[in-house]
Image 1 (cartoon, helix red, strand yellow):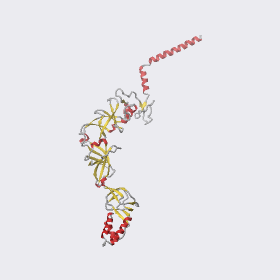
Image 2: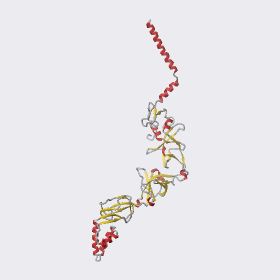
Image 3: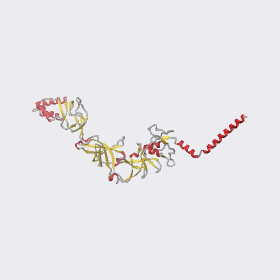
Image 4: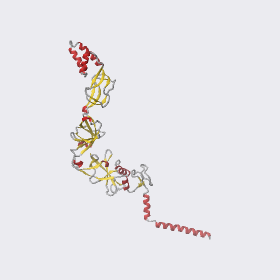
Length: 416
């Protein structure tokens, strides 16, 4: 009897479990399944600055410490273009990505109704044509230098050094002996006297020897050049030969403005072209000059060509080494309208220039585009090919967009 009761209770318990299971399954709707699926999908968190981060729960980015946000799926839009991709609106906002609709520039009216110009950078340097070398007039040992610092000004005719020269001592003895027989051998006297003059011994010193008939052991040397010392080659006590350099001087009454022109812009510059210069030292002043030299050889390391303009330097206001910027007036520039974009929009790899175009007006869908750069217009570039008027371009946050493209395996700056 007890056994039959136990079997009956066990059967009722199993029946209750089965009925409850079917009842719970009937209450579970498609909506609840979809909600659960969304929760599963949203259980991935990423960083706006480092989209490669994929965390299973909310927290902070292990790289930069920023708060993570839910990672959205389905960002790829291969159905629109093979190399397009979509970013979440949240990621776009956090990365401060900005876009701009590009338009044409009219070179006839652009730049405040003035002729277009090419922006250059450079510096002031000494005029090599007015750089002179002070050399020794005879060999010997330098006993004293009267100019030993760079930047000192040397005036032609001023005392520059005291020199002991065995050759000069011998020549003075010969001159004194020739004085004794001057009347009987005047030709010998003239020959020895001219020897002293050829060593650039001043007439006053020769006359002093002739009057006193005494040998000068330490002979004074006088400058035959004028300018500011920019190189010194000897020190006191050095032995020098006739013609050895003592120092180099620069006459700064005129200086050169040296600038570099990129290889692609060489076609726009020529001799005689007007150029406006602005120095960092005098930012409110404009100096107008003309290009008088273009280097015939390209610098293969920087891919630039050097150009220069000669500037008059009253009161030596312009110091060699001063930095400057210049605008070369492009008189031979085409007046055909072109496209201009901000430099911030361009990613430059060294071999190619790329930009990101927003190809969907409503959604943040981007696509990489290779462009051919034209002239450097200061804060912007002229685009020769690759973009059309009216296209929307990423101008801020370009590197973030490129990082997303790389993570998705799309065409990017580093991946073709």
